[in-house]
Amino acid sequence: MKIEEIELFHICLPYVAPFQTSRWTEYDHECVIVCARAEGLTGWGECCATRDCAYSYETVKTNWLILEDFLIPAVLGADLPDPPAFETAVDFVNGHPMAKAGLQMALWDLWAQRAGVSLQKLLGGSGDRVRVGVSVGIQPTTQKLLEVVAGYLAEGYQRIKLKIKPGRDADDAAAVRRARPSLLLQVDANSAYRLDQADRLKAMDDLGLLLIEQPLAHDDIIDHAKLQPQLRTAVCLDESITSATHARWALELGACRIINIKPGRVSGMAEAVRIHDYCRARSVPVWMGGMLETGIGRAANVAVASLPGFTLPGDISASARYYAEDIIAQPFVLNPDSTLNVPTGPGLGVEVRQDLLAKVTLRQQTFKRP
Ligand code: OSB
Ligand code: MG
Image 1: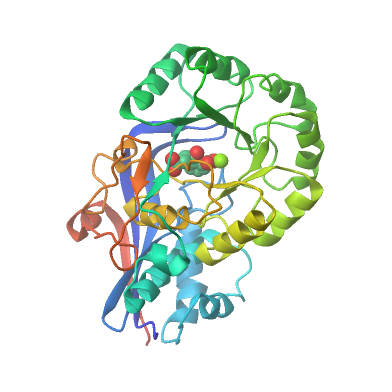
Image 2: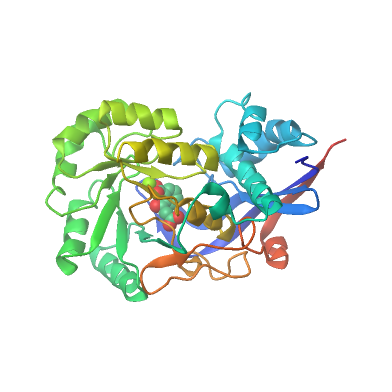
């Protein structure tokens, strides 16, 4: 499959509500959307880096820069029949997994369309729905948190993730637990703690949490390996796992018992599947994380989450949880059983609303071979 043209869009889409974590607050979703053309087909992808670098060193602008200067020149005009061919073509670029993943996603859309199948089918996933939950940002007060959680439960979400930070952790989580004794509940610290603050995390050990996500630094598998044995609750790594090799290191060291997979964070769906396969062979549960994606990235995440090792509900909520208007024609809607439908059309199976895309685009550029 010869890649003939690539288009980039830097977009900004407002959220229905601000999203606060231990390290940053987001008011709108800036990201790079990738459009790739080959053999009369159009494929879409989304890079998941945010405007600032609190979650990862990558940003919207570094995504654009790495795509423009290195990744796009490496793939334009090249014959890329399958994911391994793409991975080989961009292997000379160290790091920048989110930039690579956005471009790879657009090519997966093309590969699946060319094969005449859905992305789910091409990946080997199954089932018509995936189980999902919702990630709840830090709220101004515990009272407000209880109200927000109650609102999501009323909408039908059956699993809640609370963002936490020192000072807004055990008390908040205990309040939610008291209100909902049997709720599937988990917390995410986004690297807000140090190992010498383990007592704050132990304070949540009796709350029946599914997991504690990324308590320590993004690049610190070693201290996570010292923390996990001190807790009964499973540690789940997010930021620390950027490849299947990191997953192996973390599991061999005992740094976690669960892994959050985000295709964007691990350089693309191909590596996401490798992490899934590695964990599944060892009976380590995985679940699909989220980066507040538009419908494009969401469609990819839903398809990957239909692989059999994704045994815990994902951070892939309905479009309306994020956006008043998503850039896809049919937004994702929550089913009463706390699931989202897996698209069945060819490729990603979503239709991009070009009118709305143009409206939210801050910068656009088309790349062709000179
Ligand atoms: O740490 O999982 C995270 C959003 C942006 C960046 C990092 C994270 C998150 C979320 C939201 O928790 C997940 C979602 O609903 O997309
Ligand atoms: Mg996380």
